[in-house]
Image (cartoon, rainbow, N blue to C red; front, side, top):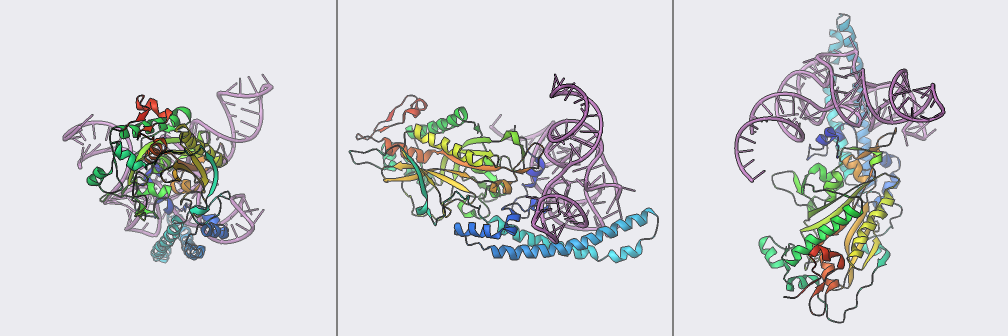
Length: 453
RNA sequence: GGAGGGGUAGCGAAGUGGCCGUAACGCGCUCGACUCGAAAUCGAGUUAUCGGUUAACACCCGGUACGUGGGUUCGAAUCCCACCCCCUCCGCCA
């Protein structure tokens, strides 16, 4: 079912270098090179809107140098090719070619030098381009940070409690399901051990989410590798810029996935899909590993910010003309899960300053956490348009037309930890028990509530 | 870990130093013929990318690409070295 271009796939395995085989063959495919060259103001605006510190003038310097070197070396190569053809002609006619050969003697050496300089110049341009974030879609609100995100809608009404409410971590511990202390002993901070009902609830959530995606929607369930190579991480945009956010194996160029988006989107790296195959949808439940560099002191209690958590992820490959429809569709899939779990939430559109690196437009779903008296992110649904498709070389071929980049989308649907947090806090009762959402009861062998010990 | 085979256009596949990369041949796709229409058949066409040029991803000129990197050579898909991936067999471990 997943027919892949093995040749291109193999190329991507030459890890660890920006100068990989695709770039060496001439393709500079991150942000659209032509766009940057011909409409630098578009990129400049995008960078400004994102508050990026990259400067388009730096690109122009690097690219100018690359082009100048290229022109020089190509002229020499042209000369060499013409002369070589003459040599061939002379030899065929059994004539003497030594004079010509002598003339060419130094040429290849000079070309080799220039080739080296050109390759360096190209990889400089590439390194710059690889750090350029995606250009926000026009419908993404311009803004500085999370305070300028735009609320789209709300669903459900936060419950009014007539007793002192507890936060989910404390509830989970006191009900005997969560053990942060043992996890800290086993590993360290930002890990948790789930026991009994909590472990069961996590499995129930995974199964419930996957069942919805595969039985009611069009997602194909996948069980991907949890560690991937450098090329794969680069394809979805985690590398080269966000290395510090990732866990990396010590003796291998392998990284633990921070989200199943990485293996799922790269499932089609190097492929040319049939236009009729679009849209294509995959989902997977995987652990996600994040170093949470730079978030010291944030969300130190509870399940909100872990080094390891389980998440069901949705990924869609879409036709460029259809991708924003697909974003609405996929976002709807995530919303429906929250509605079935009877959890109040709101939808916000992220502003340009708060969007992820690869996204052109992102909706966040924020679930109501009564103990924090606030909405907290539980799902993020993004349309990356052709950004990842360029980096990972994922194309489709229209009937009779030229291959073009697909659009990729990804969305959480949903993480188990934050879901459990919301279920515990929203479902808590005065007697210390927690009433589970009806939709989960069949997945919990009929258990309707978690009772205090 | 050992031995062998393989990686060439959207797919399959031929091609062992220049006349073979707009890459034989087949499939697919596009257009046309035939047909009331379709199938079948027949005919024609169909690589990507970079630079220059340009209003232009139109033409034209040039460069590059046969898994990746390097070497030999005036010239490499072809010869040499290293590495990656796939397949088969053996060993080892489940």
